[in-house]
Structures are given as structure tokens and as C-alpha cells.
Image 1 (spheres, rainbow, N blue to C red):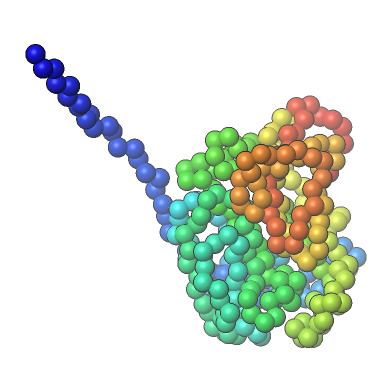
Image 2: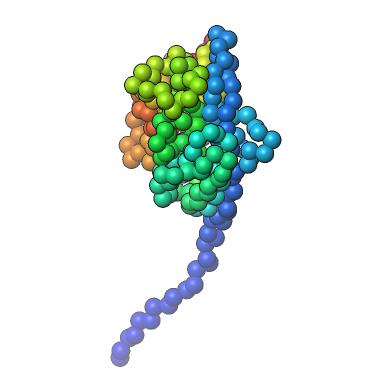
Length: 278
């Protein structure tokens, strides 16, 4: 008697694949003016949404760009400046653009949004890109997990509230120079530190409720290191430069290098501790 074992293959229901999208963005690199808390007016270069029609004013930082992992992102950069400008987006697979868009022209960038994370976009890689970034040509790109807008990276990093905290500086000697490209960056001495384009005491509040597990997305678009803390609370660092850490760590303050991004969790107290959280 011979027994024959037969292995049956039973088809399993197909799992739905996340739906990807195409995100189309027009950005205008242009000029504007910012008034500092002490009343000083400084010239800025920055990004605005659109194709420069109607001469929109620059905003610093640039518009928040958002996509989901796997999305195709198409960005058209329109140049309303007097010199060529290009874009550099950290963490994206892009061919280096050493030419950019000439004044009055445009150029395009296309990439597939990678793993979820917090990324910096800024002027680059033209000869005076360092001046352009310091003038205000920078912004944040947030890539979210497909179909999971309240997860930072995956289900283990879910949050109740989030805020983008973009750090930078302004040196009026650069910004108010007739031709900023002639400024010697070795003499760069910022007078103002900015959080999301505002200098204290004009900085905006970040909204959260009691008990919220809050995600802070730090980005440093400046040329100096900045140390960030939330007074009276500890911060859990979960990711750096869009890379989820295998071993998160907890601290009171962390120093963020130029061009770096850092994602941290802060747990808001469940009851009013009295006073503002800073």
C-alpha cells in the first residue's frame, strides 16, 4: 500500500495594494520683504505656490509640500529672480541640477516619494546657492505612509498632533545687500533666529491638546547649529534625515546641524501644568 500525499494550493484573496497618486506642484522663486520684530525691513527670496503669474510675494519658509510614499511628485520651478536658481531635495533620487532655471524661465523635477519622513527642499546646486538658501529659498517636504496620515512612519509611530518646526536665520548684511551674490559668506553673522519664518516674540504657537502624543518635525535650513528643547518635557528622537531609528532615544535637548531633519515625540501633560509650554 502506497500512500501519496498531495499538497493542495488554495488561492488566497489578493491584498489591495496602496493606491499611488501623481502630485503636481508649481513653485515660484521670487522676492519679498519681511519686517523683523524690531521694525527692520529685510529683503527675502523665497518660494510661493504658482507659476509666478501676478508676481506673488515670497514666503519664508516656502509652502509645505506633502505626498504619500510611492506617489510620483512633479515639481515645476519658475524663476522670478535676477539669477539662475535650481532645487535640491534631500533624500530624493534626482539627477543633480547644476544649471537650474534662468531668470524668467522654468525647469522641472520628477521623483517617486521614498519612505515616509521629513525632508528639506532648498536652492541648489548653482554657484551662488549658499546665498540663495540664506536669503530664504527653503521649505519642508513631508512624506506620509500610504493611507495612514496619522502615522509618522508606521503604526508604531502614530501621533495625535504634529507640527513642522523649520529653523533658520537672517543676517541683514546679506539680505539687504544690493547684490547678495557678492556677499562674503565667511562674514555671515545672523542677527535673527527664525522658527517657521518668525523671530521671537513673533513666533507662532504650536497647537496640541492635553495628553496628546505630539510629533515635532524639526528641520534646520540655516547655516548654524540649533539646539531645540521643550521646557519641562523630554523628547523622544525617533528619526533622523527621514530614517527611522532602530533604537529611539530620549533627551531634553538635541542639537540639529545645518541641513539636518529630526523627528521627535513629546507627550503633552494630561492636566494643565500652569503657564505656557515653551
